Image (cartoon, rainbow, N blue to C red; front, side):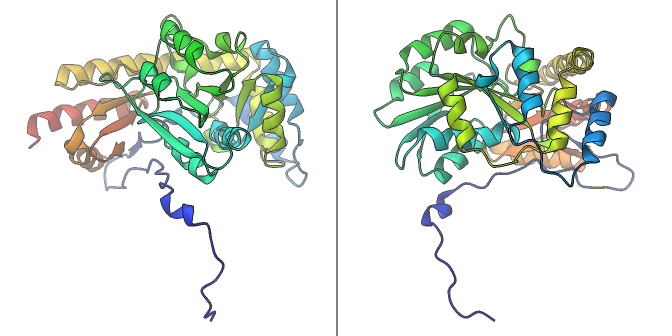
Length: 364
């Protein structure tokens, strides 16, 4: 047995907040469990995507294409951008870490709204940078004016999660345009659009429209949500060539598997993508039904443009999450703040609405 204290690890690790993944519902006799805690797509893989993944898996003894050439080409074609502007990684979350790595030296600032995506402070601290949190406004939206005011000489990177996770709220085109104009040209603005496919395009701007006019704007997207590839971990960034080149320099070699690359290419085939968007429309309709049901019961959910809803419940957050757990529903509580509830299939949503209605009449 070793008696020495072992290797000396980075002291900063003690300050890194733990990422809390959504948990499955507790198995209970006679109750079908539903996981509404991870913003996953509740539909199974589309047949063409599954076929492509199976075919690619037959060569799993080989390294994947280092450059993800076919996938990069498919993304570039789909979004009408040069291939030189596209980089891929293990989900958009993998790209958030790479973005810190290419912009920040020790002590530089990374700004984001709070609460927002849990990965932001984690990748910031791991990268030796300093989180610059700016509170959401009273409607749980990004306070872009406050964020612009808070930028200082240390700020190198700004994340704008639109729609925001976990609140589902989004900022409009004019507000985002005015914010971008106020940000110094040497600060990289990353518009994180993991839930882009679920938004009302008339109300929420497309980040790519800002990318075309601003060299310091980059856009993150993912195959995890609308396309249902969360288990394969593949996301992409569209940015101007200098940023994209830098991201490729720090990428994990062979990080995106052959199976993920093949599935991503298949998902972007027109007929396959159309089928995926039909599912998105069903989830958006269910989101509207859940929102209306919660409001009728007396809740005040945020105005969501994502595949989930947010209930700001404060100190009652844990009590509500426990009621859901007892009903066979896993939701994602944020202690003493609120609960994020992913939109599931109708059966799960029906139970959620019944549970919520019962809870609000019986709560302490």
